[in-house]
Image (cartoon, rainbow over all chains, first blue to last red; front, side, top):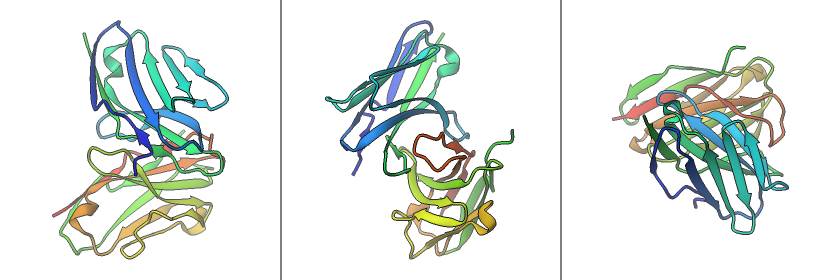
Length: 112
Length: 115
């Protein structure tokens, strides 16, 4: 039962433009959401997070938006750079637990 | 600061053989996680340790998988006997605090191929 869904397996964006990666979840008990970035042959690295009490969190070029009523979050990367090309995983956890529930990932390609 | 170390990086075995993976978390990190990532999927938690005690092993296939974290530092994950569907990347992660909002730091993973 996939509780975190990333419905776009891949996304291609031109350098300098905005990348928008989407994520939906089904478990209303989730209250902490994260994005991880993964390069080939490396482990995932933490990118940005947001708790359910906020609807936006920004860190440099990366902004995560949370719409609790729609059970939807998105990651915006502005401006996109070729080095951003990686697989991006959305993850969520409940306050009462520690396990991260991951989506299947979206492969982002930023072309020069 | 050294990251999470895992070995081996790659392993190829035949089905019904046994295999073991090793993880050394970031120094001082009390919580350690093992994830299984099948190709095309996101990582799935297998087991979580807090120091040397198991916090959550609800998704660990206990008939063939076992894990231990002696002395609350290094950890080993074993599969015996392996099945074809065990082919995956096995990721180890660690956190300093045992709270959900603490960042999990991942190692590079061990890619297991079962033939």
